Picture 1 (tube, one colour):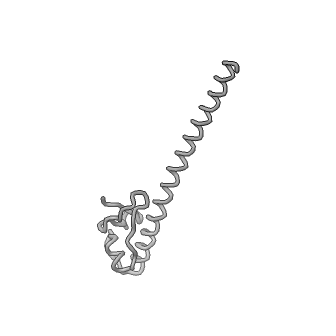
Picture 2 (cartoon, helix red, strand yellow):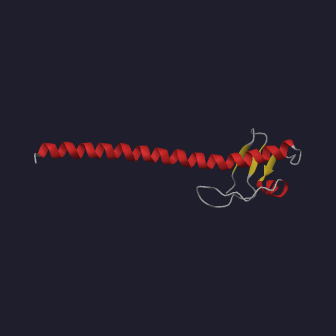
Picture 3 (cartoon, helix red, strand yellow):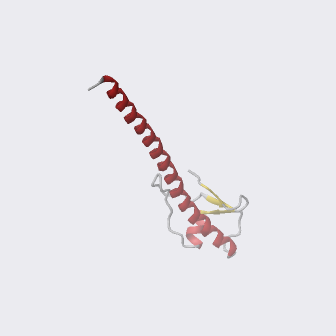
Amino acid sequence: MNYNRIIIYLTIILVMGAILLSSGYKVYQIHNERVKLVTEKLIIDTAKKCYYNASCVEDNITLEELYNKMGLANQTNPLTKKVYNPKSYVSIKDNFNFVEII
């Protein structure tokens, strides 16, 4: 086999491998962001229900309050598989922003 042909095939394989790896990594990161977003959205929606039903009146609604008042099941971080700290909270002032306390 010709030496130049081997170099061309090897170059094509390396370029395709680099493209596939970078694309796969990007897809993996987007997936992780979306999985975490779904969990945080559930917590935020539950906090909104609690706030609008006047069950929770503070500026910061902790997960512990949501567990007790709204019957929310213990939530875990889908990336680390650890239960969120019950002191983590949803801030009403920051337009219902979830703040995770580690």
